[in-house]
Length: 344
Ligand code: SF4
Image (cartoon, rainbow, N blue to C red):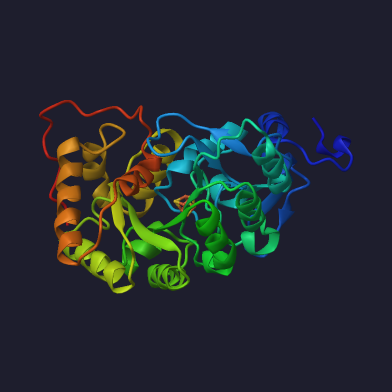
């Protein structure tokens, strides 16, 4: 299929997937290579809101982009890139689909009498404030539509650019409700540089939380995910929680890394290439998609003790948002499974 047959219409994500399946990602001749070395393929979407199941606090998600140049090695959304016949490794972070008409489509969907104004989760399969948002402003325009549609939002991001939109987020908070979950898995610099190569410094993200709160927006932090062996030691968790508290976050939540499909393949390849000595322990801990329940409980109990110590609130919907990368169908570890590692 040739994209140049489409005239001025942008291809749909389905057409993109067919093209890539036939001829590889290099066949996307309309994709623009930008200075960040990523290629951006504009697409048109037929629907903006996606219905999801198995998430306790929201039924709808909204993602203006697919793929993410933040390129976190543990990213659960990597495996979703395979829906477009692209790989969960390099292509996830370097071939970004841009739904250029999403705000208009969303406005029409919110206008329907059948729309019940249920909460919409933004940032569940990509980062809505990855750098290209500075150019397209699709996230901002979507929020403007959500203000008009009086629809509440839960937003997850690692992008400090979110402070650019505090005016519209505040409008949203006033008319419907808005909570920002800033993702800061750790403030440890080595872990950050290693695991989240394209993201802003964790302290910059925490300063963004402070600015949002000062503007009157409900904002807190997800330590999601805590990665065993990289950010799981008590001292790193304590430093992170203290920094979160120091920046006035309204709440904190956490989860432990989940590995599945293409995400698992990418992460384990990365470990075997860069940290071969850690591979046997991680392979053992991740014999299944999730670390053993006892290990996860141990980490969560540690976080709970520390958040109490530093006076940080816990909200039940925070853990639901933190679990966004842990699908309800994750294989539960068998009862009585060994408690993994107390891994520093
Ligand atoms: S910022 Fe979020 S969506 Fe982007 S790569 Fe990292 S975890 Fe994935």
